[in-house]
Image (cartoon, rainbow, N blue to C red; front, side):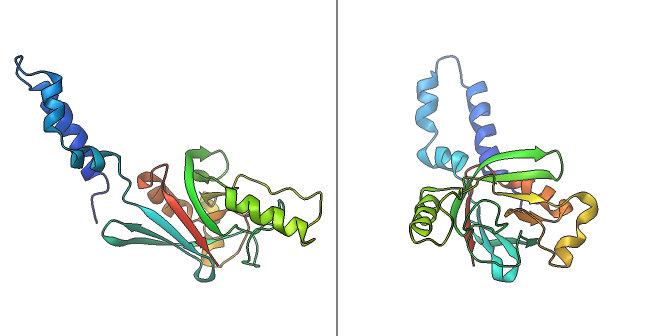
Length: 191
């Protein structure tokens, strides 16, 4: 298995080591000149991207070398179409980013997405204007990639869609995903 944090961690440790062992005659400014743009880019660059394919019930992780991992998943509704409004239990499609990593009291590890995005709001307003959803409907929020409860991993094995529109990963596998995916990771959810 690939070492997940080698590049950023090694650059940070190298920077600290260089600073700690810089002779008294050298200033921090000269040390900064020795740390190249490549070092800085590697320390803040996120090599991961997530693609969720609703039709295959799969969450795939890619890094800068290509495919990295695949996790089986479930959603909220058997209707795998785009989220129309709050409460429809559908998972939105589109391009998102992970904005918060937290531990949810019910299902543990959770990666909160930036839904609704500007594009989500545009589509919602357009559907409202066309009468496809009620005028008093709300767009909703709180869409995340999160774990099942520990004793309910069977929901993923049996393709049992149970969430309110979130993406659910087996509890044991979500702990792994949560351990290496950073805030800011892009997430594409496709039909």
